[in-house]
Image (cartoon, rainbow, N blue to C red; front, top):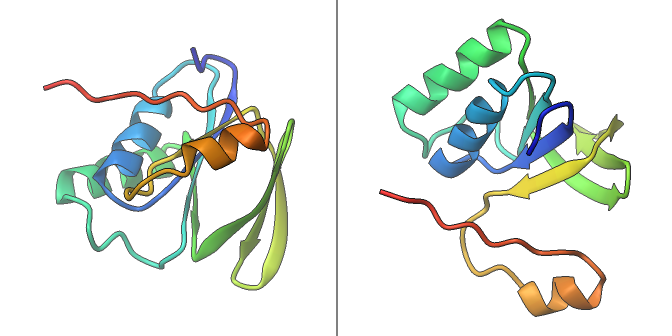
Length: 119
């Protein structure tokens, strides 16, 4: 599904790190991970290690201390440590926990797909 796609994963917990590291293995995928803090304090060590390995191999771009400013059909605007950054982008995966405002997002015209993990 994400082969040859530009994907932004947003979040800093285990779900976000697992998604980003997994996507970094997809042939042709360009993957970035945006997180508002400077360290992944809530994530398991094995997930932090997978992300660090993917980053070191050049398969994953880490955008620590960043926030999403806007999402357009072909790009995302991010603010990182006070500086604007625009990335070409096809898909955004938000792993932020809490309750997603699904109805609000649908009213804005955003297609929402809910995926549930398996054991």
